[in-house]
Length: 441
Image 1 (cartoon, rainbow, N blue to C red):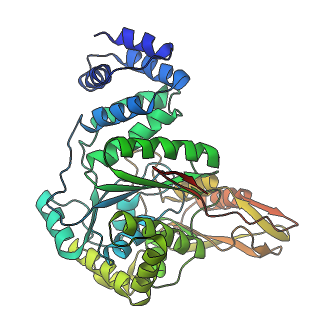
Image 2: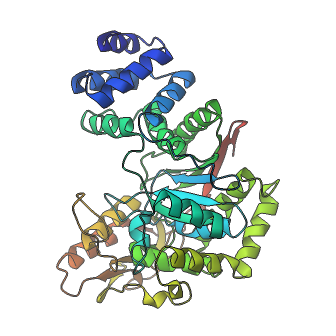
Image 3: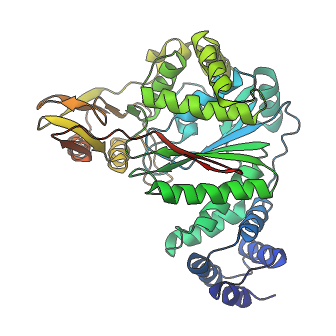
């Protein structure tokens, strides 16, 4: 086999065989196929696409290029949840204890953030002493004992994806649905879950900018899951404004605790109940979403979900008192108000701009070696649909006392708010659900 023949084949839209795809992936990992040929192949895929079978074959080849996690030592149906990213997305912090408290084991491997704000692992590390690195034995034992564990990703999960993505990132070939779908699903399949729930975001703060593009990506990922024997469902959710009100690591942990107490922002609570319902159905704990939702609401009302969070924190070395006393989390030295310059209604909040402002305050990393400040971030006081008057507080920046970037971040946050004289039309938080049976809107 020769890489040049595969480039020609994809350039004219012909279907590759499983053997050809595995040859290509193996060559990317071993370096026997040079970067310029791998990049040329990725560009050909961008123009001509891939069939569902090809995409599934590419996914499995990338998943099998590194470690395949075997979760059979954990009792029950293991359901993984993956979000395609967004600003203020702290759903794993809520769903892990909430779903586990209803009997579905959560053996979750999460990543760190690079860009807007920290990832799930960074957020958990804002809890003093919390360990995100566990041995395989510790990981399995904890899930079997208390029903949940959240750890950092292994360094050898789908290495082919890591190499191929690095090439795509610098050759303008990221935005190909088959390549995005296989990238996401190769890591999920390698992580060993029995079933997968995908939260596919769209809007200003997401990679996919429209609902239709997000649905197309979700259909590709669900098709992959179905092809390789993983029950997979995708929810298409809005990211035209940040999720919840808090952006920043400790701030987001605090907000997650609020939701587990039965409080917190309505959009975050509603999304977690919807996603959690799908997870209970996938995990075989409920026959339908309505019954599953009732189970989740009861777990919150009874305090079982919050107690599960305290168990999770204690098991991984953190102070479980944080679950009842979130004031123990790091706090920023200064608070800076962002005020409205006019009367009107909030029509939108550019999620990407809010995320960049949070990063500039120190809540995220512009480069891998950057150190995160767990305490900083921002709080959105006004959200879409709220009426505000001139001088009213739109947001509060949580900043370092001597932070010279707070002033520029304040201007960036103010510019992210779109305020109009008339109220906006209501838009749904969840636009569609995609399963092997089709799209339900």
